[in-house]
Image (cartoon, rainbow, N blue to C red):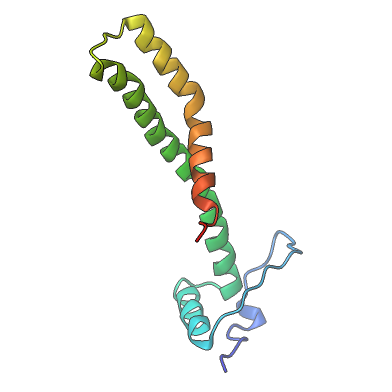
Length: 124
């Protein structure tokens, strides 16, 4: 069984913020050893390391939304400009500016909806 008290109290960093909410998970002994080693190699207690990883992952999703919004914006811009051109129509400068304005105002919502659909469980 893994030793859960690998770090003594004197080795712990002083806490400046009191945290009162706990999140738990169940792991196999092998998974526990792997996570403990990674935390130890980074010079942290397992709980500190896990907290940082969870928060970093949560913040990365927010950062990813910005990037995905730009990709979705490019997709919308291409679809809205190339479709009329493929039909042999010309797009005026005013029409193009209107398309750009529309894409700018809808790309974030479109990206959020796309991500939401991907998170939903797929039906069998």
